[in-house]
Length: 182
Image (tube, rainbow, N blue to C red; front, side, top):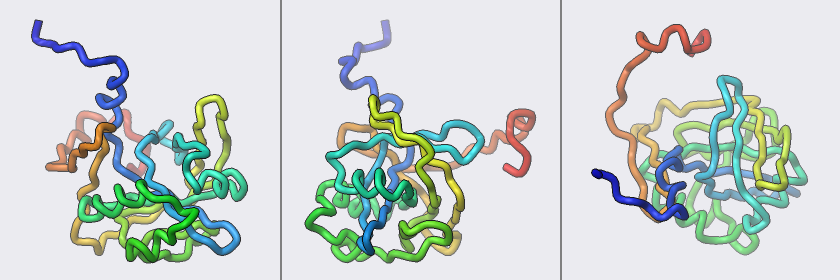
């Protein structure tokens, strides 16, 4: 048999590799950033599921303000993104500490991160407490085409990451499945 059994406690490392995200919140004029790798798109609408809990300082602001910005860093920000996830906003101004630029969002109080390749302004549409899952509705999305580095990176859940490589264009095979304008 060509397979080696993986401990079931590590099964999530086989599925986790969505892009690392930096999620911003703002409350009482104080911006914060948390690193999130547990997220997924829910369908072709702007619905995103994201898992976090009270261990993240931003959790309280997210619960109270019901808004955030999901920002996607490129691989050249990997060390900063991991470091952001290893400290607390309770005692660290992460924008200042990691030399990131908060840019005003159009529709919400949580800022965009100027150095990211993309940002999605979101409102919390639901919270599933039993699982710590926020359902976010994207209300505005932006891409930063001026950024030279566009490759994103993906957590494997065990402290290692993969980096985007060459893209495969399979649009002609999927034409009947893609929503208009995609």
